Amino acid sequence: MITLKSKREIALMHEAGKLLADCHKEIAERIKPGVTTEEIDHFVESYLKKHGATPEQKGYNGYKYATCASINDEICHGFPRKQPLNEGDIVTIDSVFNLNGALADSAWTYAVGNVSKQASDLMKITHEALYKGIEQAHVGNRLGDIGYAIQSHVEQAGYSVVRDFTGHGIGPTLHEPPQVLHFGAQGKGLRLREGMVITIEPMVNIGKYNSTLDANGWTARTVDGTLSAQYEHTVAITKDGPLLLTDQQEERPF
Image 1: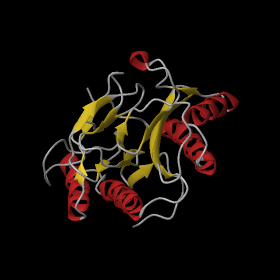
Image 2 (image 1 turned 90 degrees about the vertical axis):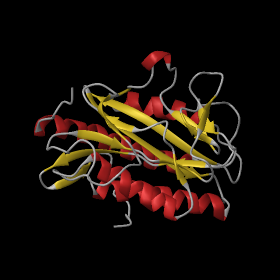
Image 3 (image 1 turned 60 degrees about the vertical axis):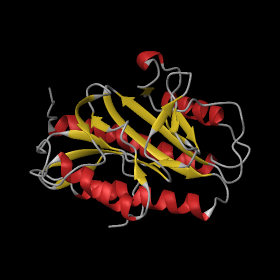
């Protein structure tokens, strides 16, 4: 069942989203060669505690961390670890904040020092694809419009969109209907209604879109060892258009 949120509920989720967006800005300052993703995870835990919030994903189906930290060919759900990040890596930090019962979810891919043009181009196209999808998140449009916009942008650049992991509804629980695919056909799928809150979170690979799961049962990576990037916002569907609840107020490509 899809839950429609009231203006009050969306406002509370927006407060959680602002906190998460500010945390991502702090993470951006900390990502550099020699830093470990375990250190980033500890920072996020401390940040949450300082602001009276909690990591919603910690304990979810037994997950042990406040963040997911996916490096290079890891698509999503990478575990924070003790190994230092290296110059030229890319790393996606994904976290879900719970502030007074309101949830917000956002992932961001970061360059570690100077990265290759191949990695930089992948990040750029994935970032643009996120906003191509958000542009379609209007009352009366369909989920397929979001997926089509993302897939078209990604494939025109010669990359592929991951099929095995999708966006989702959110609030008051972490994963709710509907499933938000990042590929699809225009005019198909569920019609968007005012009060829906969803995540749009394209994962884009340089090579094949297929994924494989590590022995830990969580970490997904590309089957061909190519790089993967991801950007994610929590988005409310309003009569005035898409409202980015996790907006970092960055300069956007539209």
